[in-house]
Image (cartoon, rainbow, N blue to C red; front, side):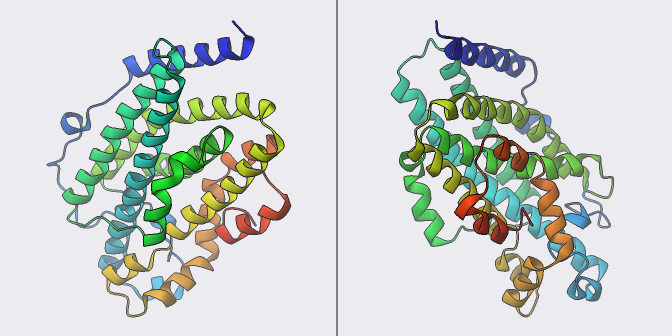
Length: 299
């Protein structure tokens, strides 16, 4: 067995063992009936896109909490969209490898099971806090249909990491913050524990793949990294959120959020793990740097 394959199988075996010991059924392990205190936020206040802006200063405490409720539900809606695409990519990979005896493939199936439960957990949380899911823009809906075909090899793992690592960093901060609703913290904790394995799987796969990738695949991965950053960045300042909160000019609020130094700092902190990893692999810089700057995740 080649060393790269052995490494891949060893990583997958370790992750399968961890999954057997630390997996959750959110239907039964989340207290969906717990109280939601009226004075607690649904996200870390400093994470909110309008935090520190003149608009934020004019908001009542109740409006700020409502903004947090809508923003966390927007992120959960993005998570459902992303995880559905990821499941399709993993299943396509498993199908095409046609090696169910491989631990690598078996872990792909395990991760699909995790992501199914996460998507159900997210939609139930949205419903439990009394909100509605956010619909993705039409162009993203169309693009999402083709992503499993367009992203294979290194680009697949790059897109996966952009979707996973940004939210992971923010949820780790949520878990520790007692200003955040216990329900949100409980959901975030389950997600973080299981996503740690998913991030490890994707990072190891990308690090193995890139040395064998040709120039075209590497450039494609570099492009996907930047464009994924733009998509995630746009989701984080969604005018539909501001409309539901009752802000008179949602587009003006979006522009304010995108230029908000507090919001940009949150973005850069959220990207503080994935960006250096991409830099180490040679996936940053060049013509795509402007797209990264537009996303707000780098200066």
